[in-house]
Length: 573
Image (cartoon, rainbow, N blue to C red; front, side, top):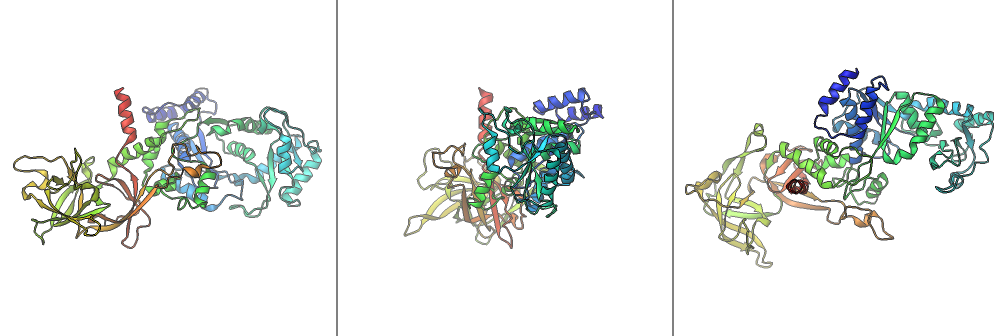
């Protein structure tokens, strides 16, 4: 298995940035540390929706397993029933599948092992390595000490093995009130790592579990359940983020004291993204505070939000590949994520015409009853996507911002007396402007067209510098378009004045809703999730709110690619 796994790995990673975790795995394969096996796991807590930071972990764990011919489990660390719901379990599974990964028959839960974990706790009690403590949570924190001062021992630390076994059994039987007793590991109250100062292993909590119901009234703590779940499943490389680095001694202690199979915990830098928060607590505050419409709001960094906005799994996987795996925390510019998205959508998104802020345009010398079907390329990047027919008539809509009555220098769009090209159609010249008598606002343009300029070619070979998109007024479909921007105005949302929190940096212009848009008729029946490039405007996705003939589009990304300009400048330097 080792040789074939290495061959698959080499084939898969020819263009993959190297990372230190791969180096660890390759050394373990060389020394046959785990019998040539690579077995990872993605272990979400089902207490919220996954976000872009989880995508990095998903791609890393499933990707490494695939590259080395190994396996990856999906395991839910469901040890806190007060915060966990079946809804989150299903959303997590949907997100992992959407990203393109499959755990096959390896769907596990920490709750699968509750009975075994209880027995492991009993073993530690019998070894004199765990005891039942009557201190309250507040007293436990008080006894723990500080980073510079050692803690002090609980007055219940030296109970006999027999008494601890009896009390722990009675805890399970439900004899004691919630929070009145805990089971703690007996390690060292003077340990320099505060987490090693007799950590809590079990607490009493009467809460209905989404899988086990009311069978249990005591639940294991994450640090106790996680390492032993890894051990039970035969995980080889337990990959987690840097905040768990201080937990590794405790991970090792439980496994060593119980003398069970011992995976290796490896920490890597979590994803930090500019203009974004990735804390579950903060994301929950955005939802509960009404700052967004829900977990799948297209401004949210959740995978469900990104999916609704129009992101593709390919773009997110490409992003995770590009940022690599590091040992030190850093902040990734969100422009890179948007660049990966544009690179992907440019190849796959059909081009269509849409007018977001319509301005009526009448071609005076075009026959009033004539309609032409003009051929338009669906995607110049992919000829296999073919062409479509777009209706052209006397009355059109163009983008309001494409006209200036008094244009500045280097204005190449429409203005009085100015000639421009209509995409896929003809050259037109503006000859008159109609304004609202009361407001002075331009409400209609009158133009003439050159019948010999169809498709942008003219007998005299003249060229114009401006090309505008348009839709036929009689054939266009009405649509609502939601324009999204960064949710936060500052790259670091936590950069606030004293007395404020991150919500002070919310962008008041993160959403603009346009309700009078017009799109070409080829979009009739467009299904939710379909992605398009609106010519000259950006990439857009059909929102699930579209129904009953109503079309709603979310702007996925603008056409302007900041990251591409940065890369070009760096190469030029």
